Length: 333
Image 1 (cartoon, one colour):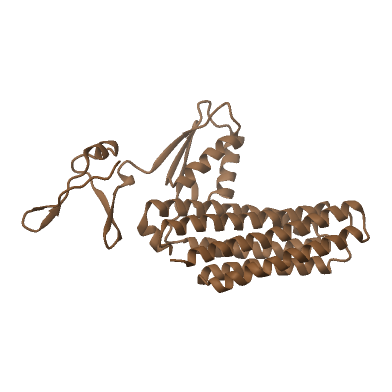
Image 2: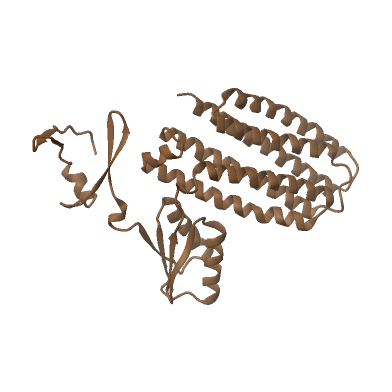
């Protein structure tokens, strides 16, 4: 709607009132007697919001028979990200035992806080039990950082030892990062609609929410590259004897990643700049080590995998620089 001006009126000798635009009220389904939420944004503005709980924050998703279960699950993820507390899955043909098991497993693996609470022949009801105050945005980022660091260490260890079980464990842990990534996106979307929630997360503006959205995406990409290193470890022909330079690059890459998150936590622009400068040096180092690998001993297959590992390490460092650039942007008021 366009900007409108309303005159404040005094009623009852002590109460100030202002009327609502009728078109907006009708579009929002507001009726006499309904309650609205008034949220103070700053000293000079209020947000008037319809309480979603009036109609129940529950969505119904009818599964498309023309699409696969995985395709339909993407729609479920979209409903989760929007912020629905409850989601009803309906299938006209009903769910067989295998479909129920698959849906329950995927919900547990990918959607933090969502649980199956009711079932019928053609319906599965999900409910969110996670409260944002119990697990904040900062909690999610810290958890992601710890998992990523352990994944990185174990991926390089699996490469050094030729340990297939360890490599597969790293690949499995990437699912945890995906879960936290979806949770943080859900949190950030909710903060855009609720300034009070945003303030409790430490977000002073919508610009902050956009910045953190890009940061958690970079973290998710870092985990993807660590997963790739573990997969290259599985496909390597035999044990790699000389990994000194690659391990050194790996140590530097995870170090700048952790330092980028430290700079973010402190909103320290000087530390963020230190990370960006260090990443340039790591990129140059990767080129030199890659050249040595390609010229050195070993099979061609092994050289290709080691080159790909180095490329992933370079990308991890570059994503750390991206996080640091966003930190600098967030640091400017």
